[in-house]
Each structure stands twice: as structure tokens, then as C-alpha cells.
Image (cartoon, helix red, strand yellow):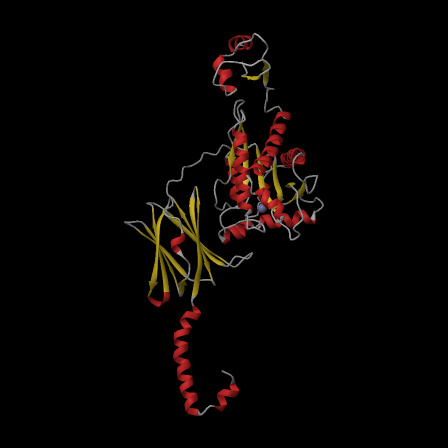
Length: 442
Ligand SMILES: [Zn+2]
């Protein structure tokens, strides 16, 4: 109501008006002060389940545990529930069900029914990178199998070569988003899984996925996992986005040395990728740790790590060039937090631009994902073959001549008939002249 009209009203009407306003404001005020919970999401990781509440503003809350049955209770002061809790896919390995209700004084109470021994960890995140204020509740199951660190175990000659595959982003952090809403986190995981299959089918090599599903892993935990698994190499998979939609092509990055001439484009990309922790949600006090300060490697080992990363990056580019557009035909360098396991060759591959509608469509197809994985796999194989760590015998083939039988061929190469049948996927023993057979290594 403007001052001008208010003055014109008779005093009685004015009094009435103010009285009405006062009553109205008593009704409105608590609602205005309330924080609303606008969305709720859940991400299931192998070692925890994360609940994220989107809030209209920061909130005061209490969290406590109740036993028999096991529950975790969260009281959010002056809060309204506007999120659809029923959309969560429950039960989950640790979270059985979720309820909420109103308590005295506009408190929203959320009750989580959890498995025995689940302990909670919670923290608030301020507005950042397009995400609203958030409350994060991690539910950690009791029996976490202690994975014995393979880091200090000396490798024996017969151990497999371990390749750590890091699918970028995940969970709360979608990474770049394509014009048709394809998420970078989805593409990186799909390529990682294709690469895993190829590596595990190769005798002498074994793949380890740093992320196996749609959940968030903070950058320092990724590096820790690479080390704990005793990996010999690390490939981090990403897809980039820019505002110019026509831009396309792959690029390969390694960690830059301190003191090297800074590459502004690469540095901007590293800053974007390093912001993953901010979006994915890391306890505020944990974001302080600087992976670059904490590196304890000696100069010699560092030099060696950087050289081998550079060599591997060049091999990947050489492979990708054969079937895919390339953005930069030389490896680029910047301070990527995920590449700080310097003792092994570590590279980050931006496979393409998800911001390009045509490339986005391709990145969403299995054939394309497999093709990119195959290029990375070939580079990996070449790298370890050159180092003499991997022996890839050339396959033996035999062309069937007139008068030959499976039995005579088997005898000639000193292998069994059944092994030839199996290797060639044959059901019957009849052969055709000119047929090419693959033969097992005797
Ligand atoms: Zn990324």
C-alpha cells in the first residue's frame, strides 16, 4: 500500500487495515523465514550412500541416532518440505526407508531407517557453481572391508599390469551437459566400462575402475585409490564443453611441471575439472588439502613419471587420430588434481566436445564409446609392449589345404582338436578348402 493512499483513508479504516495487516503478517512471517527443501537426491556408492537436500537458504539442523530399530533422525529448524521423498528408489544397501513430518516450531523431522551399524556424516554446502545451498548426509555401513594396500608390495614377474580407469565426475557432479542433456558423467562411465572389458580380455593386464556407478568420488580419493590398487597406469576419462557448438575433437593432458610456461586454455580446463569437489560435495574442511603441496616424490621419480605420461599421451593421440577428430595434436599440460599419482604414467583424455550436438549424439552410442575405448586400449598395449612388460604373441593362423582334416592340423601344430573348435567357434569338424583357422599357442 502506498503512503499516498494510506494518508487519504479515514483513521478508522486505517486502523482496521493495520490490524488486518498485523494478523496477516503473523501468518506469513513464519513461512517467510522458513527454509524450503526443494529437492532430494540419493547416490549409492560401494562404501556409502549419499543423500543431498537442496535448500532455499542455509539451515540449522540436529542429527542423532536411535537404536532398535536403527534410525538416523535429522531435525531441520524452520523448514518446509517441498521435495518429493517418494521418488527415491528404496531400499538401498544401507538406507531402508525414509519418512518426514512436522515437529513443534516449524521443524521438519526426517527419519532414515537404516541397516545395523550405519554411521552418519553430514555437512552443509554453500551455494556454488550453479548448485543451491545443500545439506549432505552420508550413510556409512559398519563393515567396510579393509582393502590391503598393494602399494608397497613389490611386483613379481607374473603379476598382471594394472590399469586404473577413472570415469570423470559422477553423482551430484554431472560434469559437462550436452544440448540434449547428455551428461559427461554418463559418457565417461560407459567408455570406462568398455575399456575395462578390453583390458580384462587381454592376458597379462587387469583393469580397475575408480568409479563403478553413478556416485561422486572426490579427487583426492581417486588418486588414493589408484595408489591403493597398485596401478601401473592411470587414464582419466572426460568430455569437454564450450559455448561454440561447432567445436569438436579429442585432446590429451598430462600434469604440468611447476615453473613450466602456463597454457591458459589448459589451465582453465584444469580449473573446471578441479571444481568437481565443489559440485560433488566434499566436507568443507577437506577441501583445504592441496594435492600439489602434499606430493612427496623426489625429483627423479617426478621427472620419470612426467616423461612416461608424455610418451603415453602421444600414443593415445596417435591411436585416436586414426578414427576420431583431434582438437590438439600434441599433449597439453596443466595442474589437474586427479593426475597427481606421479609415480605412474597418468593422463586425462577429453574424448570430445559434448557441447557439439553431432558429437553428443555419437558419444551416446555404444559403437562410438567402444571405438574410443579401443583406441585407448591399443595405446596401453603398445606402451607396455615397448617397455617389455607385455608380450603380445602374434596369432597363428592356418589356411586349410586339400586333403587336410582337423585331426591332421591339430597334430601338425601340437594342439588338441577341441581347442581348435573352441577358438574358432566351430560346432562341426568338416572343413572347407581355403578356410582360415586360428590356432591356440601350443
Ligand atoms: Zn570432466
